Image 1 (cartoon, helix red, strand yellow):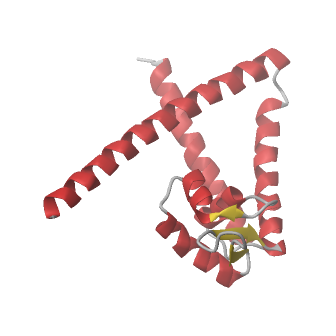
Image 2: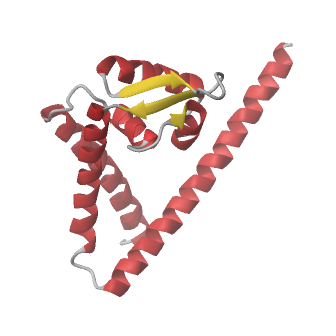
Length: 165
């Protein structure tokens, strides 16, 4: 029996998987073949303009600063990111994209722009707005779920640390 919910769920998962697979294939054959998707998304979180604090970037990615440090070490070695201490507060570590990092960022953004155009161009203005609203709703729901699970995980970690003391 046909179920619109099942069809939607399967389609959404296929889209997610295929976007990631397409990005990986494009990366492996292109100029930035030494980057992983995770590294590319880290460049995206840093952004092409002002330097960002490590903590701000980690928050944008939903990871710890320690996890980001490992990724930034690799990106610095590969020449995509520069890292330095803030001149006003030496405790703050700032990161920014190098020229090579900005180029990788722009190429990745172009892929996303082409994807969006392919989906949106055939739609009437009202349909575009409805689709954008639906995507915002999905994004909001997933963000709520992520935050819920993150809070539960943090509570488990805190309880375990209390037990161990």
